[in-house]
Image (cartoon, rainbow over all chains, first blue to last red; front, top):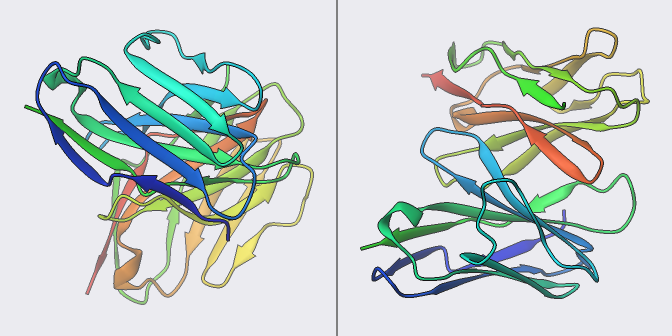
Amino acid sequence: GAVVSQHPSRVICKSGTSVKIECRSLDFQATTMFWYRQFPKQSLMLMATSNEGSKATYEQGVEKDKFLINHASLTLSTLTVTSAHPEDSSFYICSARGRGTNTEAFFGQGTRLTVV
Amino acid sequence: AQTVTQSQPEMSVQEAETVTLSCTYDTSESNYYLFWYKQPPSRQMILVIRQEAYKQQNATENRFSVNFQKAAKSFSLKISDSQLGDTAMYFCAFFVGNQFYFGTGTSLTVIP
Protein backbone atom coordinates (compact mmCIF):
# COMPACT_ATOMS: atom_id res chain seq x y z
CA GLY A 1 0.00 0.00 0.00
CA ALA A 2 0.89 3.66 -0.20
CA VAL A 3 3.26 5.12 2.36
CA VAL A 4 2.81 8.22 4.44
CA SER A 5 5.77 9.31 6.50
CA GLN A 6 5.29 11.53 9.53
CA HIS A 7 8.12 13.15 11.44
CA PRO A 8 9.12 13.45 14.13
CA SER A 9 7.65 10.46 15.93
CA ARG A 10 8.32 12.05 19.29
CA VAL A 11 9.09 15.60 20.31
CA ILE A 12 9.48 17.35 23.61
CA CYS A 13 9.41 21.13 23.65
CA LYS A 14 9.33 23.91 26.17
CA SER A 15 6.16 25.82 26.84
CA GLY A 16 5.91 28.85 24.59
CA THR A 17 7.92 27.45 21.72
CA SER A 18 6.64 26.24 18.36
CA VAL A 19 6.84 22.75 16.95
CA LYS A 20 6.51 21.67 13.34
CA ILE A 21 5.30 18.21 12.33
CA GLU A 22 5.75 17.01 8.77
CA CYS A 23 3.59 14.60 6.83
CA ARG A 24 4.81 13.30 3.48
CA SER A 25 3.18 11.01 0.97
CA LEU A 26 6.09 9.05 -0.44
CA ASP A 27 4.64 7.35 -3.48
CA PHE A 28 1.47 9.17 -4.42
CA GLN A 29 0.12 12.68 -4.74
CA ALA A 30 -1.92 13.62 -1.73
CA THR A 31 -4.77 15.78 -2.91
CA THR A 32 -6.22 15.81 0.58
CA MET A 33 -4.48 15.66 3.91
CA PHE A 34 -6.14 15.28 7.27
CA TRP A 35 -4.74 16.14 10.65
CA TYR A 36 -6.05 14.40 13.75
CA ARG A 37 -5.45 14.63 17.44
CA GLN A 38 -5.86 11.58 19.62
CA PHE A 39 -6.14 11.57 23.37
CA PRO A 40 -5.27 8.41 25.31
CA LYS A 41 -7.71 5.59 24.71
CA GLN A 42 -9.92 7.80 22.58
CA SER A 43 -10.79 8.03 18.95
CA LEU A 44 -9.23 10.30 16.37
CA MET A 45 -10.47 13.86 16.49
CA LEU A 46 -10.29 15.64 13.16
CA MET A 47 -8.55 18.98 13.48
CA ALA A 48 -8.44 20.15 9.90
CA THR A 49 -8.65 19.08 6.29
CA SER A 50 -6.28 20.42 3.69
CA ASN A 51 -7.22 20.11 0.05
CA GLU A 52 -4.99 20.69 -2.93
CA GLY A 53 -4.87 24.32 -3.92
CA SER A 54 -6.91 25.67 -1.05
CA LYS A 55 -6.46 26.69 2.53
CA ALA A 56 -7.05 24.25 5.31
CA THR A 57 -10.54 23.88 6.67
CA TYR A 58 -10.54 23.72 10.44
CA GLU A 59 -13.05 21.92 12.58
CA GLN A 60 -15.08 23.85 15.07
CA GLY A 61 -13.13 24.57 18.22
CA VAL A 62 -9.71 24.21 16.61
CA GLU A 63 -7.73 27.44 16.69
CA LYS A 64 -6.29 28.02 13.24
CA ASP A 65 -3.79 30.55 14.55
CA LYS A 66 -2.47 28.02 17.00
CA PHE A 67 -2.42 25.02 14.72
CA LEU A 68 -1.00 26.26 11.44
CA ILE A 69 -1.43 23.87 8.55
CA ASN A 70 0.44 24.24 5.32
CA HIS A 71 -0.21 21.95 2.37
CA ALA A 72 2.96 23.05 0.65
CA SER A 73 2.86 20.55 -2.17
CA LEU A 74 1.02 17.43 -3.26
CA THR A 75 3.41 15.38 -1.17
CA LEU A 76 3.94 17.50 1.92
CA SER A 77 1.79 18.96 4.65
CA THR A 78 2.98 20.49 7.88
CA LEU A 79 1.29 21.16 11.18
CA THR A 80 2.88 23.82 13.35
CA VAL A 81 1.81 24.07 16.93
CA THR A 82 2.56 27.67 17.85
CA SER A 83 3.27 28.86 21.38
CA ALA A 84 2.76 25.38 22.68
CA HIS A 85 1.37 24.81 26.15
CA PRO A 86 1.21 21.65 28.26
CA GLU A 87 -2.44 21.16 27.30
CA ASP A 88 -1.31 20.78 23.69
CA SER A 89 0.52 17.61 24.65
CA SER A 90 -1.08 14.85 22.66
CA PHE A 91 -0.71 12.35 19.85
CA TYR A 92 -1.08 13.93 16.42
CA ILE A 93 -1.73 11.84 13.31
CA CYS A 94 -1.83 12.84 9.69
CA SER A 95 -3.42 10.97 6.85
CA ALA A 96 -3.29 11.53 3.13
CA ARG A 97 -5.63 10.67 0.32
CA GLY A 98 -4.90 10.61 -3.36
CA ARG A 99 -6.99 11.35 -6.41
CA GLY A 100 -10.08 9.31 -7.15
CA THR A 101 -13.22 8.63 -5.22
CA ASN A 102 -12.31 5.15 -4.09
CA THR A 103 -8.89 5.74 -2.67
CA GLU A 104 -8.53 5.17 1.00
CA ALA A 105 -6.54 7.43 3.28
CA PHE A 106 -3.16 6.29 4.48
CA PHE A 107 -1.94 7.23 7.89
CA GLY A 108 1.38 8.50 9.13
CA GLN A 109 3.03 6.93 12.13
CA GLY A 110 1.88 9.71 14.43
CA THR A 111 3.75 12.22 16.57
CA ARG A 112 3.81 12.21 20.33
CA LEU A 113 4.11 15.84 21.44
CA THR A 114 5.02 16.60 25.02
CA VAL A 115 5.13 20.21 26.13
CA VAL A 116 7.00 20.81 29.36
CA ALA B 1 -25.25 14.16 10.87
CA GLN B 2 -22.74 11.41 10.26
CA THR B 3 -22.05 9.17 13.21
CA VAL B 4 -20.30 5.90 13.92
CA THR B 5 -21.07 3.85 16.99
CA GLN B 6 -18.98 1.07 18.43
CA SER B 7 -20.84 -0.25 21.42
CA GLN B 8 -18.09 -2.54 22.71
CA PRO B 9 -15.31 -0.54 24.39
CA GLU B 10 -13.37 -3.69 25.28
CA MET B 11 -13.39 -7.28 24.15
CA SER B 12 -11.24 -10.32 24.64
CA VAL B 13 -10.89 -13.59 22.79
CA GLN B 14 -8.92 -16.75 23.21
CA GLU B 15 -6.16 -17.35 20.74
CA ALA B 16 -7.38 -19.28 17.68
CA GLU B 17 -11.01 -18.43 18.41
CA THR B 18 -13.32 -16.14 16.48
CA VAL B 19 -14.51 -12.74 17.58
CA THR B 20 -16.92 -10.21 16.09
CA LEU B 21 -16.67 -6.48 16.62
CA SER B 22 -19.82 -4.44 16.14
CA CYS B 23 -20.26 -1.15 14.35
CA THR B 24 -23.28 0.86 13.34
CA TYR B 25 -23.32 4.14 11.52
CA ASP B 26 -25.73 6.77 10.39
CA THR B 27 -25.66 8.78 7.19
CA SER B 28 -28.15 10.06 4.70
CA GLU B 29 -25.69 9.53 1.85
CA SER B 30 -25.99 6.55 -0.45
CA ASN B 31 -22.42 6.36 -1.68
CA TYR B 32 -19.70 5.95 0.88
CA TYR B 33 -16.91 3.65 1.93
CA LEU B 34 -16.55 1.70 5.15
CA PHE B 35 -13.34 0.71 6.84
CA TRP B 36 -11.95 -1.10 9.79
CA TYR B 37 -8.63 0.21 11.04
CA LYS B 38 -6.37 -1.42 13.58
CA GLN B 39 -4.20 0.60 15.95
CA PRO B 40 -1.68 -1.57 17.82
CA PRO B 41 0.38 -0.25 20.74
CA SER B 42 2.73 1.39 18.24
CA ARG B 43 -0.28 3.60 17.40
CA GLN B 44 0.24 3.23 13.67
CA MET B 45 -3.17 3.10 12.01
CA ILE B 46 -3.37 0.05 9.79
CA LEU B 47 -6.15 -0.66 7.33
CA VAL B 48 -7.72 -4.04 8.05
CA ILE B 49 -10.50 -4.15 5.51
CA ARG B 50 -12.66 -1.88 3.38
CA GLN B 51 -16.10 -2.12 1.88
CA GLU B 52 -17.73 -0.05 -0.83
CA ALA B 53 -21.32 0.73 0.12
CA TYR B 54 -22.56 0.00 -3.40
CA LYS B 55 -21.26 -3.56 -3.24
CA GLN B 56 -23.55 -6.13 -1.69
CA GLN B 57 -20.88 -8.77 -1.36
CA ASN B 58 -19.15 -8.74 2.00
CA ALA B 59 -15.45 -7.98 1.87
CA THR B 60 -12.96 -10.54 3.10
CA GLU B 61 -9.25 -10.27 3.70
CA ASN B 62 -7.64 -13.49 4.86
CA ARG B 63 -8.82 -14.01 8.47
CA PHE B 64 -10.86 -10.82 8.46
CA SER B 65 -14.34 -10.50 7.06
CA VAL B 66 -17.23 -8.11 7.41
CA ASN B 67 -20.96 -8.44 7.67
CA PHE B 68 -22.29 -5.41 5.87
CA GLN B 69 -25.99 -4.76 6.26
CA LYS B 70 -26.66 -1.53 4.41
CA ALA B 71 -30.32 -1.20 5.30
CA ALA B 72 -29.52 -1.66 8.97
CA LYS B 73 -26.39 0.51 8.65
CA SER B 74 -24.37 -2.16 10.31
CA PHE B 75 -20.77 -3.09 9.55
CA SER B 76 -19.34 -5.72 11.86
CA LEU B 77 -15.85 -7.21 11.68
CA LYS B 78 -15.19 -10.89 12.19
CA ILE B 79 -11.71 -12.05 13.06
CA SER B 80 -11.18 -15.77 12.65
CA ASP B 81 -8.34 -17.80 14.16
CA SER B 82 -7.37 -14.89 16.39
CA GLN B 83 -3.67 -14.34 16.87
CA LEU B 84 -1.75 -12.55 19.59
CA GLY B 85 -0.75 -9.90 17.07
CA ASP B 86 -4.40 -9.00 16.64
CA THR B 87 -4.35 -7.34 20.05
CA ALA B 88 -5.06 -3.68 19.30
CA MET B 89 -7.65 -0.94 19.19
CA TYR B 90 -10.02 -1.35 16.29
CA PHE B 91 -11.76 1.62 14.77
CA CYS B 92 -14.72 1.46 12.47
CA ALA B 93 -14.91 4.35 10.03
CA PHE B 94 -16.78 5.52 7.00
CA PHE B 95 -15.77 7.97 4.36
CA VAL B 96 -18.19 10.34 2.71
CA GLY B 97 -17.94 13.88 1.43
CA ASN B 98 -14.14 13.83 1.58
CA GLN B 99 -14.18 13.21 5.28
CA PHE B 100 -13.69 10.26 7.58
CA TYR B 101 -15.92 9.56 10.53
CA PHE B 102 -14.48 7.30 13.19
CA GLY B 103 -16.08 5.31 15.94
CA THR B 104 -14.79 5.42 19.50
CA GLY B 105 -12.93 2.17 19.10
CA THR B 106 -12.95 -1.33 20.56
CA SER B 107 -9.95 -2.53 22.50
CA LEU B 108 -9.39 -6.17 21.61
CA THR B 109 -7.16 -8.43 23.66
CA VAL B 110 -6.20 -11.86 22.40
CA ILE B 111 -5.53 -14.17 25.32
CA PRO B 112 -2.90 -16.87 24.89
